[in-house]
Length: 172
Image (cartoon, rainbow, N blue to C red):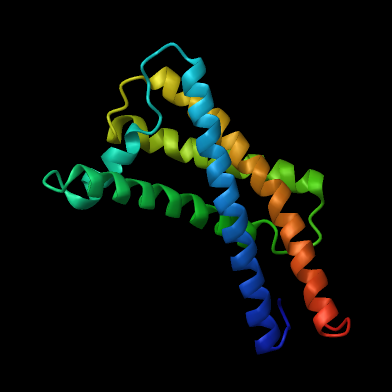
């Protein structure tokens, strides 16, 4: 986007945001589905979605209704996933021309970066009762999140670039 005209720069930024958000929605869903599946395979009573209640209580307070707490926790969780996906798109894929292999590798690296960040904060802050299960399920979930981002973001940016070139007669 460097050196692009203001309209072209805005269009490029919009493409990054739209692709990042779309990929983030799918990657966050994949992250949650992988956690749900793994938690069912684990015999411990660990519930990977208990943190939604904790987030909700932190945001709304203990006196809020259980439904409001749950909704607020999920909104916080989902917005984190989507925002981190947009950040990945802007930071890693911005140079353009990201291959599928590089996308997957950088996506997984991004997911593991988020995992390290989460493991630094969450166990003590959220009073995680099953730390081993939390780490295992969270690790796998972040690998899935990153791999999905690494597949979808380059494909989405290639598609957006192709559409933009078609709309401008090959000029970008």
